[in-house]
Image (cartoon, rainbow, N blue to C red):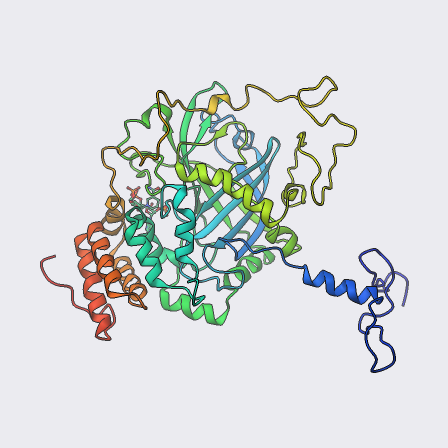
Length: 501
Ligand code: NDP
């Protein structure tokens, strides 16, 4: 064997050559293993520490690298470098289910996370969205309760549809998102065949200081394709990693998936008089009111080389905004701004942003220092501000223009201000009546009935019927008939809907 083809020698993590990959050091053939066999002991010790805690939500994910390219001119709306004409920005995107654990099946009925990290020249911009334009709740104080209701019971360790419907029916603001979840879009066929949405309203500001409220829509160029419930369940058994496998294979085969970014843009002053509260995460802005305009395209063309380093250790945070992009008074967004960074500090560590997958490609000049596993040190630079020693200075003009006014407001625990057409069920009803075709409506009813008849108490079922009736009287009647039929062992298609509804 020539030197070039020789396999490297195994070493310890300290680089010391190991004598054996397979045998521990023992006193005689059957003797005890000795503690000073440091190579074996350290191998075991490291194995015991291989995992970081899995994410509390969005634990099962798949990801790829790619680029975002601006194809239109939207500089009149934002000065953000990554959205200037012709700009091309490297990015990384992670898709995930929400409630399932790290080994759960990809095709489970669930919203999908759609997180993007843009490595811009002005720092990392993270857009941490979903494959749905809305969400179950509108105030972050309910988030942990909502997630607990989707996870496992404390006594049995099992998931519970009863718990899910109990929470949803007591949280009527969930109706719009639950409609989408129970529709065919709750079980996407692949990660390539679903849209992504920023979901929240954000703000953009142009070079002249003019502000806009905006919503992000990433439209799949592959087209929307979904599984039926039966197909999704079958695939969960056949290949729990079906989505991960599909994404990886498509990219390996050179069939790079692509999404078109379209934006809805609302002039800043129109928010106050808009018919829906534009900062309510349970609502969309109907396309007719704010037609989406094309901005550019996102292409995923490179698979991760190491799953743990790039996918497990990736940390996205909606707090990562770059100049030209800002927040909005959405109370869910406010909570997420705190929560994402916080969870990464716990899950990965205080210096998670120094890991290659998370580290910005632009210079970092921060006064934060030290902590576990620090890799980039401040060296001999000043470690406090203000200083006269040549340390970095903040730019007072950077974020000031992104604020919105809160005049004369008092501290309090408020509901969202109601706009003319705000209610919890209106847009869910519109989706059912005006957007879905007859086949999609049938599938929705079937999925609701199937889900709400699996170990759901009759008391909660009664509330399920009331919930859907408020969205649409016919839908409520069909769910009622379906649940009663399920009691008799009928399928939803066999259950008769009462006439005159
Ligand atoms: P439009 O007819 O202009 O848009 C309806 C949009 O609904 C479509 O463009 C498509 O959005 C989406 N859609 C189609 N089928 C389904 C489905 N089975 N489940 C979920 N979404 C679907 O009407 P409006 O803009 O007035 O919206 C009507 C309703 O459509 C809303 O109440 C909302 O429920 C839903 N919707 C609206 C979106 C928006 O941003 N306006 C986005 C998504 C849903 P897409 O092209 O994004 O796939």
